[in-house]
Length: 196
Length: 174
Image (cartoon, chains in turn green, yellow):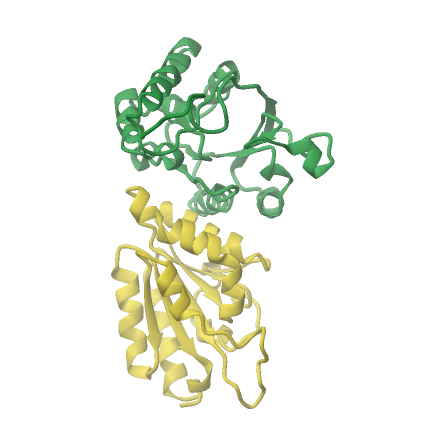
């Protein structure tokens, strides 16, 4: 899966949405293709990936066939994509995926497994209470969970740094990652008003 | 303690006989509530004492269940479980609707007795009816009699999906 493949997938979904053929919200990625491909070079097939409401790239890079992913999106499930056979879980509730990732990490550790749990979080929630609880618990217990903070400086249209009066997301651990990106897409939809 | 409490202990023993179960919450590995002693026969390595972080606790329970464990997630008051409404309603309850995941989590919660001490307004809640209205897949069981306890927990253990079992502290001596 190349950057061009990822971009083409989102463009296709945008066209479907703008044509009124998806009767549910979609959240599209753009501008982070290279870093996502780099991250997923480290993600093994047995690893768990815990996503937010924006997860098309994670699904594709974890191995979900594009046709299966598109079928789920066309069925209205873009914001909460789950593929148990690929160990992909998503939540459309801000921060909702994080404690579930912790539980997965606890289960892996109890079983003596070698899998890693990859937990994605936006820059707004990286400031929030549930993230700090989960981050502390994972760090202090040495759980196999890695946090990826996706920093687009926005939560819907709200300036995350302004409302937290901060300089950006908190520093994470060495094996975690904070990356910045800027998308051409709005928070939801594909930039056109769709009349159903 | 009476038969009701003895049956709770027997139910916990029955659950512990399944190697997939773990028992998590506050006062699980340490003393502290009436619930603690009902776990006396559970192997220590299956007791996971958690920080006070209710929403995280139900999320952790769901995550462990996705990986194949069966968490028995323990809350000594409905007022405390209220803090986990997000994970209970938006995730544990909704996952079977929006995905093929069927997390098997058993939530154990107690309604306190009003004597000999009045638990007061922030500890005396019974929100079972309200949560039943909010949930679509989670099953709720009110344990009014000792004879209901073991069958209800057996059902929860073998049922694909999540359950909330509501016990009454005022019956512990009956």
